[in-house]
Amino acid sequence: MLHASRIDSVTSLLKTGATRKSAVEELRERAMKLQEELSELPSDGLGVKEANMKAFEVPSGDSQLQTSVEAVSTQKSQSDKEIFSKLAATALDEPEDQVLHALKGVEAKAEDLGSIDDSHPLSRPNLASGKPEEVDFGLFAKSFYGANFKTASFVIDVIMTAKWTDKRVATLIPDGLDSLTLSKAESEKKIWLPGLVITNRDIRQYDLISTAVFIKKSGEVFKVERATAIIKNKFPLADFPFDRQQLVVKIASEKYMLDDVVLKPSKDGVGVAKDLLDGDGFEFVDVGASAIKDVDGALKKSRGLLTITIDRSLNKYRNSHLIPSFLVVMISWGIFWFPFVPPFITPRLAMSILSLLNFTILSVKSSSSLPAGAPFNWNDVINRTILTMMFTTVCLNIVAECFFHQLKIESLAKSVNLECKFFVPGVTIVSLALILSAAGRNGWMTLETTSGAVNLFILSVVGGYLALTASRTMSALAKKKVEELAKAEAPQGIAPFAKK
Image (cartoon, rainbow, N blue to C red):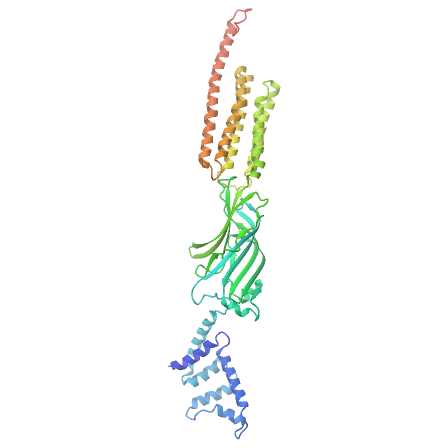
């Protein structure tokens, strides 16, 4: 067996030079130094050559050492490992195969030590202690390029900052300087980086604009990165167009898990530009940064979030949909102001049908910005109510025309037409006012309650009016029949009694 003290000496020799050079190179350097010292010896009777031989001379009893020295000096074709094993075996007075086996184990251990050396740029600063790295992050939204609700995404120009401590960077700063700026390529080669990226970006939709890394003598590292990205984001659409949305940008380390890197929001570097939402149909509400622990099975990450809260501006919706819709529905009411004469039959019917078709186009356009599977929302309630009332207008117009031209009950037809001048607009205005008063997240009724209440109101009022009209129709038809019979039974030449 190898002597423990001797093995430890060889092991310590290898550990000392594990990160810089091999043990063979160390022996070579020592041999060169020894040769230089021997060459500087004064010339005496033995001469330099004999002094060199004397330096390697050993007692006569240790013939194995003398043989090994001679073998090493003559067999230059052998490998470095074989040469070193012979020298070590001779010095330790142990069999060569045992020494070689021990050296292989020491070499493997030295390689392992070199792989986790804290001076290596791939190892994080607190790897030896086992503590995770704390990285302070900041996210600043510089520009906003709109949201696409169909693809559940938005485009943003964001500035990401990260700050952490790594004492090893002090060796990279030249003397006389307190800080140094590194490019992206230089930082990836010379220092450790947490590898922060935007994780909820769309596939291959990330455009890196600039990157800079600042290091200080104190060990503080500060990274600034600007990029434009398409961010995938889920939008709740039940309150459309009175909705409030949250634009969320998520970042995390692309390499390290929760046990290695922990993100913390910074007090600086978080916010949005003052003109971020100008001309985009939204109003800014709030912005904030937070950090969460995201655990999804084996995937455990520390994530940083930038949350921008925005409200949809009603100016565009009001001007592009509400006002045109109100104008179209008001035009449809005009049919009740046309006279009951044959030339106006077609204009009355055409105006009611064309108004309905025009509003159908407006309703489709108002929902064009939403995905096909969008939930039932306030816009749907408004459009459905207006369509229902316009359909009611068409039906009541047909009823009045039938009363006048087909059933020949002109008095009832004129009464229905006069009543519809105020009945249809009144029901429409009350229904829309009920919806608009409750619309939005802060309304006094929920979406489902409002929808049900409006449907019940229209059904009860219009249904009641139609039932009353049906009763009046039966009475008018019966009266007309009596008058016709009385007229038929009256003697010729005698006019029937005039009705007072």
